Length: 135
Image (cartoon, rainbow, N blue to C red):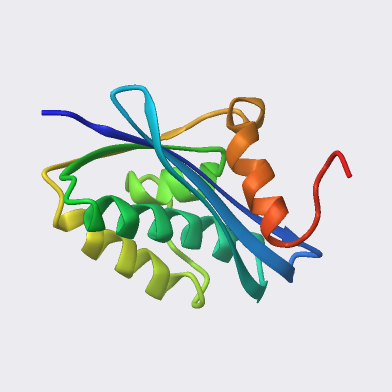
């Protein structure tokens, strides 16, 4: 069984402010997709969840059944791993949607990584809002 590896990130310039998501999908160490999507005026946590949802929907659309997600959002990883409660009302439906998509997978893991190990997804998220750290 091959596992899709996803690197996800959300960005909100202003928090709330212009927001975007970025993600990269790998299978057998090969990049199979990367996306950068503007999602309007949102909070950073909303953007982080939307990055996860976009990546999960892409994984499912590709017919994949197993994934490991890497995120620099401790909140998202801890909430999905059952260690933190979901408290903000605007995040609850996103959490429920993510869990619903995940329930259709054979295996799912989400792991917190440090921001410097998630640079490409971070750049894609910032690109979506027209803001690059280098530009």
